[in-house]
Image: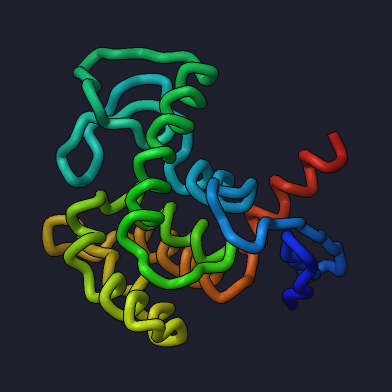
Length: 186
C-alpha cells in the first residue's frame, strides 16, 4: 500500500509470520533505496575471489566486472565500494533512458535489472519501450524475458526477475524484508 505525503512515499508490508515493516521512500527517486541495494546484494552475493560468471565474464564482489582478472581477491569493504560505484552507472542509465515518472520501487527494480543485464541490453529492450509509452502494468511480465544465459534458462535469473517484478509492483520480497528488519534491530 502506498500513502503519498509531500515528498516521500510510505510503503508498509506484512510478512507471512505477521511481522510488519514500513519504509520511507522519496516520491521522485534519484538514488537506489535500501530495498534496491539489498535486492542487488542478495542476488549478486558477495564473492571475495574472482570467478567466471555463467555469461563467461570475470566477476568479483557483488557482481563487479570492470577490470577483474583471474586470481584477484578483494575485501568485503572493497566489494561495497565497487557496488556503490557500479550502481551509479545503472542509476544514471535508468534516469537517462526512462522518459516517464517512476516511483522508488519501480526505479529500484530497474536499477537491479540494468545492473545485471547491462546498459546496451536495457536500451534495446521491449521492457524500456513499454515503460516509455507509459504502460506500467505490462512491464511486470517483461522482467521474465530476461532469464537466459547462452540460450539456457538459469534458475537464479528466474528468482531474480521474480523479485524485481515484485519490487516493480510494490512488493518487497521476504528475503529483503528479513535483511531490513535485522538492520532495524541491530
